[in-house]
Image (cartoon, rainbow, N blue to C red; front, top):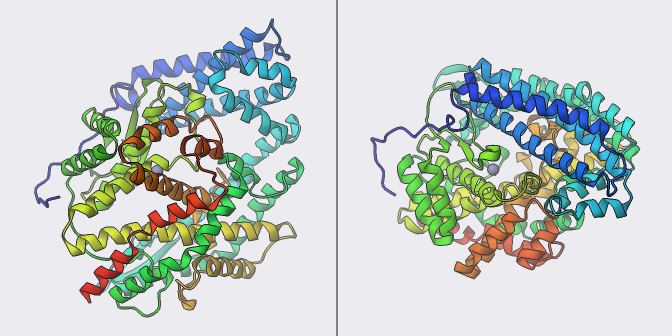
Amino acid sequence: MTTSTQTKPAPKWDLDSIFEGGSSSEAYQKHRNAVKTRLETAEKNIGQLQTGIDDSSLTTWVDFILEWQSLGEDIELILSFAGCLTSQNTTDDKADAIESEGMVYYSRWQKIKATLESLALQQSDENWNKFLDHDKIKEIQFYLNEMRDLAKSKMPVEMESLALELEVNGYHAWDQLYSKMSGELKVEFEEDGKTTTMSLGQLATKMSDANRDVRKQAFEKMVGAWESRENLAAMILNSMAGFRLSVYERRGWESATYEPLKMSRMEQKSLDTMWKVIKDNLHRLKPYIDAKKKLLNIDKFRWYDQFAPCGDAEKQYPYDEATEFIYENIKSFSPDMAAFCKMAIDKNWIEAEDRPNKRGGGFCTGMGKNNQSRIFMTYANTYENLLTLAHELGHAYHSWVLNDKAPFAQSYPMNLAETASTFAEAVVTDAALAQTEDTQEKLMLIEQKLQGAYTMMCDIHSRYLFDKMFYEKRKDGVLSTQELKDLMVVAQKEAYGDLLDESGYHPLFWCSKLHFYFTGAPFYNFPYTFGFMYSGGLYDQAKKEGATFSAKYDALLKDTGSMTTEELTKKHLGVDLTQEAFWKGAVDTALADVDEFVKLVDELS
Ligand SMILES: [Zn+2]
């Protein structure tokens, strides 16, 4: 890729073809009014639905389920549209209002689901299976069965509904309180003789500064800020866990990982096997960390050294060249996916312009029955931006492949959500590596790859281990701030092995990482590593198989919303996830460049 100094701005997306007129759109209002009317009808109809499914009520049941499914898709479109509007302009008040009404519709839709769950429970297996066998229902069997099975392992419906209501001001409020508290934390940061007041979010970018003093100061200021709130954070964490454990006990769920594993549609055994293989191969990261220490000229590798950049991070990657680059390189792996990327780019499905009042980060969102996606990001010509673009295009392709499925058969679990995105990143990174002769750029690219593997294998593992141990101990009572700190260090020692120096742990990590406080999904850690390793395993197979793999890949993506993770992998890859072989291949892929990194560092010193 060439470097050019004059680049035209990255493009804006087209939302008008979805609903013309942004947050004042009349087309949107029409859609919203229709959803409202249909919701009222569905709420009325569910009350009149015959409790038992038999020959006389079968058609009514089928129609109701299909309408409820369709309504869900249309409500999701409202939320997606609102998400796009609020992200493209954070000062758009009307967009906030659309988001709020979308959430109200969604919670009403969920209430219908709760009633359906209880109705599903009342059916005999025979009648239920007959219903699932109906031509129009077959395709969404998995979703409906999952709903019924999960309802079986819950409390009686009245108690579940009370718990759900109490969650709003109890459980979820802890999450909100934590976000508010961390949002309000500020530090005084000193750089180049100036003192600047920073939020913790701003401070985080200093953790990957090339200057070690800057990184160290950023880390210490962050820890200092959290020390002033550690007892409050401990209280929140203990209370949230207490809430969960009480509900789990009432439901008869013995393990704290029961719920997150259900959400990931996978077995504990697969997860344990993955972590075991990671632990067994941890030592293979040592040469990478040693080389990085050598390059950075440091003797003790500490928390604040993990994200230090290597090689040339200054190189520019203009948008037009990036899209061309992604297209060309995806093509050699999958012509279909490349054609899709080109279409998404040409049809302006991507919001990439670098301008004020945009939200940070990136995402990809579906557009309901339009069978389209929209990608949001800010493209500022860095390599990271190029990777984000490839990543989000991967998500969009995943949705594209699922387009001809019914909505419920399109909804895949969170551990599989990152399959296509991470895969696209891997393809693009390897292509970039293969095409550069520049040592500094090579170093930067390989380091990014290895840093990703290191984070997934160590950082995320330590979060999982902490959660596991914490929930076990929490069953016997509240843990003190000191006990939480000690537990965090135990988890880090286990997960990092000798990669981090004894003086380099981060005992307050449970304070600073918002994922521990996220009530949307408990144990919101292992799906990251799982997704990363899973797509690594796929990539490993793709490289071995060559041209024939892309059809297999599409077939796998198509089934991500219709079966368990184990079934999916067995069916399409002939692989048993509870066995070590697949995970070993994934680790080999993740660490393939360690030797090259070491060699490059040696050449430079
Ligand atoms: Zn993603």
